[in-house]
Every structure is written in C-alpha cells, then in structure tokens.
Length: 298
Length: 259
Image (cartoon, rainbow over all chains, first blue to last red; front, side, top):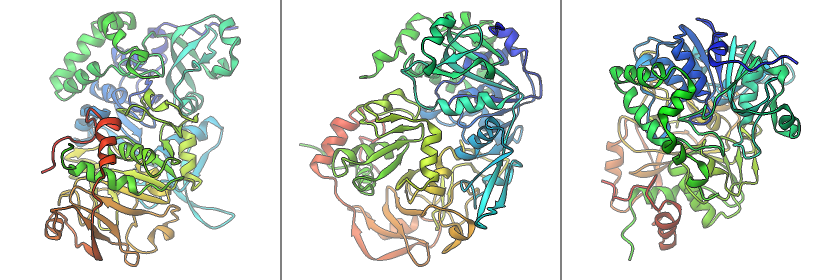
C-alpha cells in the first residue's frame, strides 16, 4: 500500500496559487489550523477558499493576503465579534464574497461528493443570497412545477480538513468521543481533486483496523495525511481539547489592527517555522488549560 | 430577596413562552439558548432542542459559548451532524427557530450581511450562517433584538433571511415552505404580525414602556394590535433559574437593569 504520510511543506506544496481550496471545520471548531498556518508560511496567493461556517481560519488567510474569493455562509469570531481581516477586505472590495446559507454552502460539497451536478433546495429562495452566487439558479421541479434553487457542485482543487487519527496509508478516523458534525468535513474532503488531512496522531494501521466504525475517510478518499498535534489550535477539537480563549482573544485584538496582524503572522507563523515550534510557543501551560475534561462537567 | 427583573430577563421569559411543550426548537447561542433551557426547566420539559451543529435533544448543564462547544453534548439523545439538523428544517420538522438581526423591516425580513452598501460596505457582518436556513424552513420564527431606528428600517440594505418578503402571499409565490415570523421580542416591546397585511404590530409593552417610545424607535410605520397587553412579569421561579442555575455568571443575561 502506498505510504501517504507527508511533511507539512510537502503537503501544502500541493496547493497552487489561484486554487479553489475547501476548508473543513465549523465556527471555532476543528478547522485545520496547522495547515492554514503552513499555507500562510508558503504565502499562497489568489486562493478561492470555500467552507460552510468559518472563523479564524478564513480571517487569518485573508489577513495574510492569500485570498481573492471567499465562499461560505458565515465568517465571524464568535464571542470575540466580527472577523476583522474579513471585514476590512470585504468592506473595501479587496476580496470577492460569494454568499450562502448553510444548506447551500454544504450542498455544493455534498453534490460533488455524490458525483452529482447539482442539488436542489428551498433555502435561499426569495432573498439576496443567490444574487452573488453564479452557482445558484432557480429551476422548476419537473414533477410538480414547484420553484426550487439548484446549487451547483463544487470540485475544489484541494480540500484541507483536520481529524483525530490516521495510519500512514491515509485511513482517517475520529475518536468515539467526537463532536457530531463529521458530515460536512467528510463531504468537503470527498469533493476535492486533492485531499490533505491533518491528524492529531499517526497511529498503527492495526489500531485503525480494530475500530473501522470510527473511520470517516478511507485511503481511497485521501491524497495525504500530515501529523499535526494540536493541529486545530486555537480552535477546539471535540473531546481532545477546548477553545484557547486567551489565544483567540489575542488574535482578535491583533486582527483589529493591520500592523498588529502582521506582527502576529511574523511571530506565531513565520518565526515558528513549523507546527512543533508553534505548539512549543503556545506552551504546555496553555495546552493544559484547554484540556477539555478540566473545563466541562462531563 | 431578589431584585426586580431586568429587561433581558423580561425578554428571555417572553422568548421561552414561545416554545410549547413537545415541540422541536432550533436553538443558537445567546438569549435563545437561555430561553430554550428556561422553557425546558419550566413549562416545556419535553421540548426537543436541536442545535445547528447536530446535537439532538440534549440535557444541558452548562451554557455554551458557541454552537461548536463540546458542553452542548451533555445528555444528548444523539450527536447527529449538521446535515441532519438542516434536513430536519428542510423536511418541515422544526416547529420554532430563534434569530437575531442587524436590520429588520416591517415584513420581518432580516439583514445579517452588510450595512452601508453592498458589496462594498461600511460594516461587513458575518453573513447568514444558519439564519436563512431557519427563516426559510421553520414553522415559526421568533426574532430577538435591540430596538432602535437603525435596526428597524423601512428598507433593508441586504435581504439575508426571508420574513414575509413583500407581503401577503409572497412566501408561497416565491416557493418558500416555512411559515415565517410570528414574534419580535425587543428591549422595548413584544411585537407580532398582522395576519391580513403581514406587517409588524405592537402586541405587548413592558412595565414603564410606552407606545410613543416604540414608534420613535422604529423607522417604519408600525401597526398596533387592538388590545395592547402587558408583557408577562418573570416569576420568582423563573428569576431563580435564570440567575442561579442557567446563567449564574451572566454570560448572556445582563445583570444590570437595562436603560
């Protein structure tokens, strides 16, 4: 079997300037942040980034000048408010924004992951959302004559998602103690031509094959896997760790000021050079604080 | 001795009363989450709470700071995934959903996308998220927001989520399935919609509130229900639950009396 484990540099080199890049995760949960940071390090340009509900992942890519077009239902920083880099770029017209509801954002990946040209929905009809999206058009139900919105499949050049474990052959799993919405990440990963998955740990193929129920992506769906401990930080990662609210707050303050976000990128991304050094910089104390079992009653 | 209820507490209690026992309620963060937990702890123990992230029927202990928060899973019947939650909406199985908004017009249409132009704008907001999904498909929508002339506008700058669009029959003509908005709960009044015209109307005031103040805070012509009621006063039990059990540290419910 083909060994699919790669280094960050090798994996992210598969992304080219101008590519359409699908990004997994939800609000501040399990975005593939270690891969996002490597995209920033390699200064990819003119990307068309696509997700369904986004936050620091897209805001950071926009702040680093990597993005030409964003396509999603939402970009915000949760309790820390609006996403400052997205705000500045969108308000000034420096990036193109393709608006979606969550349903239509997801339908684009869902259609592609099923090998269909489009899916249909009522969600979005009658509003301004379809106006900026060349991928949405009203159609007539051939059986009933009703009006529906057709949402065209999207096949990203590359998809990046984060998960818990994988073997070196690219069979990817989530722990049983997972957060629910595995489904969009799976659709995003399956929709793309090239699929890069970062995982908390590379484990033995025996470990994977002893719990096949936990596999979300078998190797047929995966181009390469990258080992990225705390690879969603500062986002949360199911039962493995919680949000790093201190870091997210510091990011939000930095992002509010164009000079400060440059310093954030210089200090946390460029100067660290790789994910291990980034995690060292975050530090053991901060990582202990986000250990989830300490912060919930579960 | 507990102090007098704040406006946030009035709003939360009003929102919780919109949930009937046994219903499927689509819940986000903020006041709707508190209202949902309050309803479950009082008059609606069999409410089926559904979170956008796909958590079905949880028995929450701690408030979450986001819909992606692992605390939401506590005691849940299923961890089903976002696509399942959105499918419940599309199938017409969601009775009630709660939304906030940056702008609202007389027909209950909502803008959470941009203020001051589009696509270039003065303030770029996060976008629809699940708001359009709920507004398009839930049987009933309750909007919870602050009440001022910048928010209650004659014409939206961007139509993110559908209310009654441009009036009676418009939702059906457009092909929309859900029933549209039924209530708007603000810090100045509780409002509903005239069933004939689909335009917003004042239905209840808080103690000390006035119709003049509500009209002055609204940028469009507001109908008034034939009989204006007094907003329900939070009971001692509801205040105890809000202050000491559901949101003891005041994450979402302001502790201070509202101005």
